[in-house]
Every structure is written in structure tokens, then in C-alpha cells.
Image (cartoon, rainbow, N blue to C red; front, side):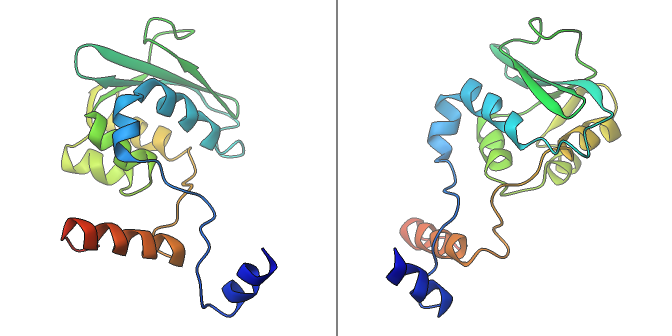
Length: 159
């Protein structure tokens, strides 16, 4: 551990602080990853919020995150939420994996139509997503750069 930390200080190695989820795992276990997303709520920004965000993945799977006063409660269905959703978005599991891993900002995905607001206002959807903090800093974390480069090389694409 000490040697690794010393090498990291010398910028000879990059130690990853948070390992992104494998997109295939996110797709296969949507409920778990929607529930886990709730821990990313920024309590200070969400302190005065009391809204339900519904996430619809096709016709057969829909979940809710009730953002209430700095917390985000998971509901396994839209009907199981404490009250009706203020905003419902439709997206594919693959797009959710992008959101979960902070590969693309949800507001950008809404603007591109990859996340569709099917109930509520677009501005409200963007505001709700903005209450959650990113975990992975793909822009500044050199260890994540290394992972992206390795994946790109393995897949024959650009990072």
C-alpha cells in the first residue's frame, strides 16, 4: 500500500478511487442500480425538495426515487412511491448505465432525446437529476482515463 501510494504521488501509477459499474451489470440489475443511485443525492441541494422522479424502462420495468428533504427513497414500482410521480422519464437500460456511470450528463441526454420526459416538465426533470452528485470524474481522474483507454483499445474505438 505504501509503495503504491508513493508511486501515485510521483504520478507513476494511477490508483482508482471508485470503480465504475459494468454496463452489462447495470442493464441486468436495473432495480439495484436505481436504488443505489439514491445514495448520490446531494443533501444540501435537495434539502427543500419533495418530488418523485419516475424512471420507466420500456413497458415492463419502472421505478421511482422520492427526493424528500435531502434523502432519496427508492420505490420498486411507480405505484409503490409515497405519492404520484412529479416527473416520469423513459430511457433504455443502456442509457441508464451511461447515467449511472456519469459518462453523460442527464440534461444532455434529455436534450438529445435519449431520455424522454413523458410526464412533467423538462426543466423539472433536469433539476431533479441535478440533485444527484457524480461519483466518477471521467474528465480529471487519471485512473479512469487509463480504464477508458484500455476499454477503447480492447473494443477498437476512441476513448
